[in-house]
Length: 311
Ligand SMILES: O=C(O)C(=O)Cc1ccccc1
Image (cartoon, rainbow, N blue to C red; front, side, top):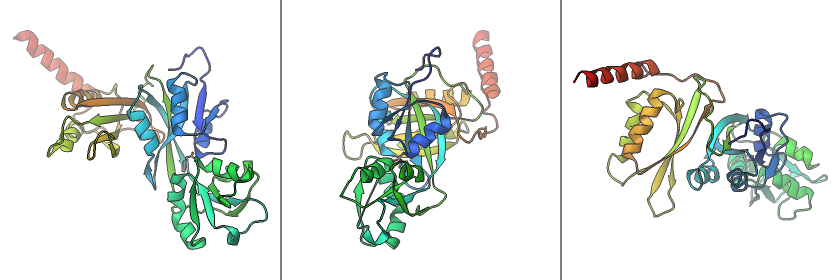
């Protein structure tokens, strides 16, 4: 993790002009950060200690989970999420000066962006083909550098600006209220302190495939009144039909109900990967179901200790 006597060395999924850079700027406005051209490269830089913290996208309100991030975090040397940022997403269609919509037969962008503008492209550029690029900003930079495989980029307004492109159409997202959630990832170290409005991320690996297996995992949360804010199954990549579950919970690992649930899961699961406890971006306090507060757990523990002493 971060050495508190030294300034944090930040990195992000870049280049400059990505939505991820916006997220990092919202987290650390003054930071002098390093850009990496993929999620994997950003997280490798964290693992190898070249940076202390890396910002990557994890979830979009329209397109769902970012597999590159979910899969990278679930495997390899442990990493933890230490913070999250929500960024409203606005896309423009940008091209080199002099072009019009009629000149566009192919569009370059990041796959997550493409999924969010498909409707607009279908209606306004029928027949246009899709050219995948590493990021939205790299599609804009590619055009500026003379890329010929596509004539227009789908990117943030700032990326069009940085690349010196002309905006052919504004606000082209199919869902104008789209939001992406980004996470700041570090090597395991000091836990962010509980704030009362926290999330915990875990990946659960089942022991075996059986009827009611997922229910067994989820009841660890239900019985302690823990709300989930995200649940996804991801292939383990070991064999067809083998999945793990990536889950965000309301609460902090230092909250008694979360700690107890994780202990329950540790007994039930083949593996539990702890991916961090961190303050919620929206600062919404956790809804603690009756009889599940820290005080309730402490009282139960004291009661048990007393019984054990008297026997
Ligand atoms: O390519 C970018 O700008 C990114 O930061 C990844 C991304 C792509 C589309 C929506 C949100 C984030």
